[in-house]
Length: 158
Image 1 (cartoon, rainbow, N blue to C red):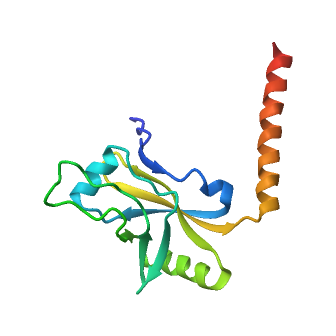
Image 2 (image 1 turned 180 degrees about the vertical axis):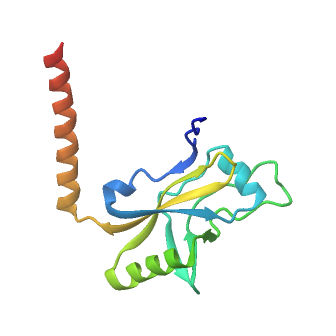
């Protein structure tokens, strides 16, 4: 029997601050409705999702404040750089996210935007709860300690 190929992802944008600023409770994969010029800009790797978030309006989920710059060669049929973009999820997932935001005070933030093997743009969303300042410091301490521990282990093996 033939082995399945591991799916590859071409990363278009990543929100690196998200794991520092929030506790990520759960993750979801959503499709994104894009225009042609937006896809071209994403493939060039020029997008920024660091300050964006997802909002539920009229039983739909929208990506707000994501920056996808205009594509230079799409002069006439360009797009707005920070327009709201519709996210494609199952109804159950949208309802779950909307309930978590309204009842539990959580936030839906984009973690990374990528292209699948089939060339479709996907967005990994995280259901998150904000960290306090002391939690961020504790996370930094743990990361530094793990880094130092790895160095010590490496030196002891040499």
